[in-house]
Length: 143
Image 1 (cartoon, rainbow, N blue to C red):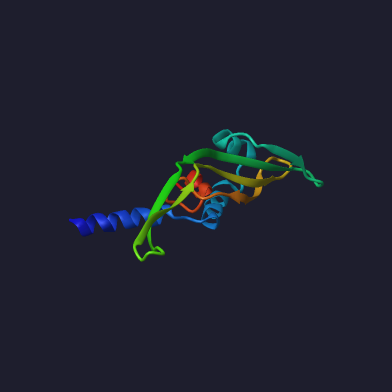
Image 2: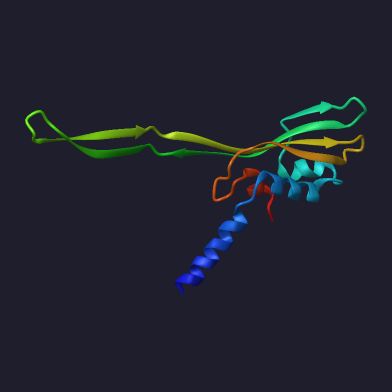
């Protein structure tokens, strides 16, 4: 029974470990050829939009923003060193790491033509996922 649970856990963990490249393939396969407005209705508005010289738009979209605070850590290690009189001296080495604030998000460049049809999607910035994933974008777009 323990082996079965281990196998199931490993399978779930591996399916959650997707990279930015895999996430980009998923997003492109689902959204290229669709209307940009439909993407923004489903996933939130773009942060910025710039007109293209030949027509159409380049949109910068960012989503999945999450902030997690990792608690501080205190590590102590006992030491023993010889003293001048030959008796051992006991002491400790203490290391402290303060709390860290970790920010997670997915950012993409979405290029649309004159009719607002998505021509290309490129992941421009992708953080690690909040769970076991290597990619926040894959957490947002993996179905």
